[in-house]
Image 1 (cartoon, rainbow, N blue to C red):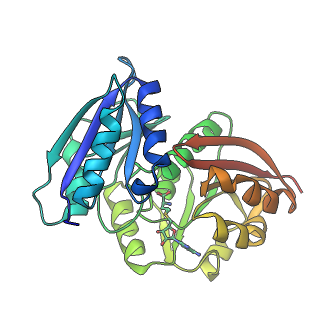
Image 2 (image 1 turned 30 degrees about the vertical axis):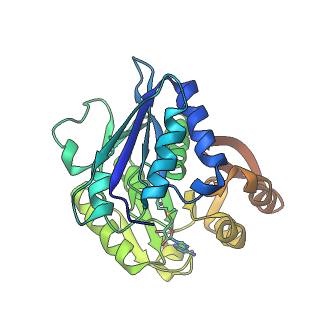
Amino acid sequence: MSESAVQIIARGPRAVAESAAAALDADPLLEGATYSILEEDEDRGVWRIDAFPTTSDEADGVAATLRRHDGLVVTVEDLADADWLAMSLSGLPPVRAGRFFVYGAHDQGRVPVNTVNLRIDAGAAFGTGHHGTTVGCLAAFDELLKRERFERVLDVGAGTGVLAIAAARTGSPVAIGTDIDAPSVRIARENAKLNQADVHFVHASGLNDRQVRRHGPYDLVFANILAPPLVALSQDIKGALRLGGVAILSGLLRTQERRVSAAYLSRGFRLERRIHRDAWSCLVMRRVG
Ligand SMILES: C[S@@+](CC[C@H](N)C(=O)[O-])C[C@H]1O[C@@H](n2cnc3c(N)ncnc32)[C@H](O)[C@@H]1O
């Protein structure tokens, strides 16, 4: 199986793009294939799938699946750069989630004027804004901001720092982020500087840090970190939130929704909203007890 350095792009109406994405999900041979699906042009109703196959077999399988969907225009482009991750991600379009517009260096100078623009470049940390889990968090946050203000925000598993930076840029005077991965913390700090956001990032596992405790209780906690740690951290997240505070939980698959929500419901949270993006689910839970 040879390595692949191509990006496959498919454009078409929403229903066709979603059905093609479902077909990619359903094919066991394409289990490991990475792709994103997003609305590229709201006015014209154009949706776009970007796939980044890692082998030529995977590339053939993805292209064939997409081409089986009438109404999608499929193109395959060569990626020539050695830094495949940065190169492929740099080809991604900017992401719009509510008021937030997440873009890379290549789109500098082409940002809208009426959005909160967050510059996040592709790199070694997770969270360029393209993943369904991140988009879900930003969309949920945007909705909440229409009715509430969040003075103190904690982002557990900050990655690039995009969520904590979004909080600081929308008026949260205290924004703290943690990550278990030291390089991610370094990248998140650089991103905060780049976005002129006053965020404090610490290298920590979960919420286990003196500075995290000192800045609480929080009005909002983001945690985009997969289902098992979300369940394991449910008591700590409750302890960090004030009564009435909100947890935006992401990183769980739709199939894991019940397990994660049950852990929080049993600890005195109420489920306020669910956002589904691709196979992912984002839960908005409020601490009421
Ligand atoms: C899915 S990424 C989310 C990144 C970013 N918050 C976003 O929404 O795009 C998860 C991040 O959580 C970090 N992580 C995983 N388990 C963690 C834990 N127990 N404590 C702190 N960070 C953790 C990973 O290193 C990774 O950077």
